[in-house]
Image (tube, rainbow, N blue to C red; front, side, top):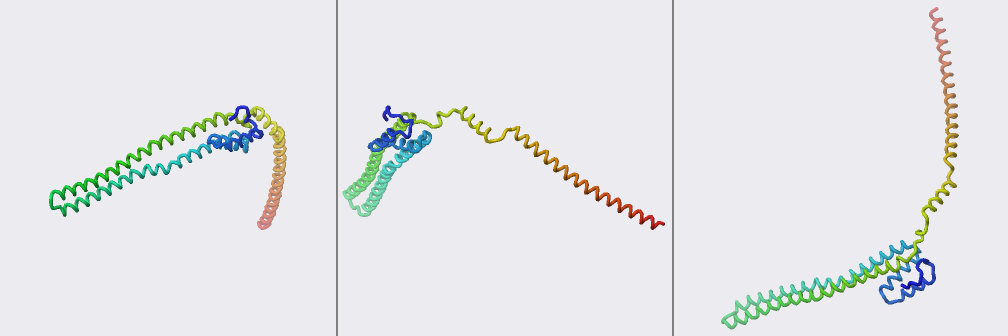
Length: 247
């Protein structure tokens, strides 16, 4: 990453040319840097670019682990094949031993049969020994190669974090919190009414509601008074009828 090119402006033409030149370079670290710069050119945000770099690192780590699946299967399969050879050798030796015991007539035939049996056992154990040696010979360089590639990916991540991500500009980093607070406060004051106006409006609404309630109450009281007068009038008529009946 050249130091004379500023990475603070995602719309700079020099940055776009640098990204294209890194993309055409046949190198892993150049490819990683070009991918990070492409994300920065597209988003213009350092946080988004950092998240993309982490995802890209996870992708390469997963690809590294997947690339060793076949050698690991071979390391696992070679001892199994050796044990299979051992079992086959022992089986042949046992079958040959039982065969020559039934056909043995003299010492020479017995010696020859025992030699055949031991040869089968030797082949079986040699198969296991060969498989274990091969698995060790494969496992040691496999571990070193995987360790080397893991360190390489870690070194690339450190380089991208120190040389690329640290030079990117965050568009929200230069904002002043006090200025943001004042701007939001002024916007709220301009958009919403003052507390005094809200209190005055609430007082007016309460006064109107009280007047409407008083009118309704007086109207209902008037109705009750009318009904009471009618009852009193009826009671007087009943009293008169009762007096007439008494007379």
